[in-house]
Amino acid sequence: MKNQNGSVEVGRVEGELVAITSFAELRVEKTGPAQLTTQNGSIDAQGIGGNLRATASFSKMRVDDVTGSADLKNQMIDQREARHR
Image 1 (spheres, rainbow, N blue to C red):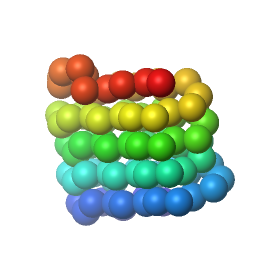
Image 2 (spheres, one colour):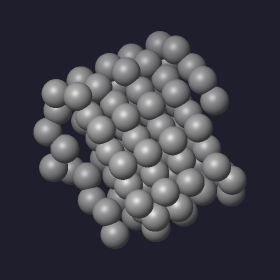
Image 3 (cartoon, one colour):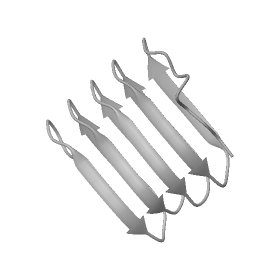
């Protein structure tokens, strides 16, 4: 899934998810493994059933309830909100 200049909300995807956007929020909930990318926008990922790779810039990133590994990259923002179980 690819989008520009608009928010993306995705939920209840059983397979692998790849979502990309810019200048807006990327929200993902209850999915399989995910690769999430946004520029100048935030990422909110919850309930990821598998590995998560998330890349953002210049905004916050919130991650909760990842059953696999979490590879998180955020340029120029404090990542203290990221939690991994």
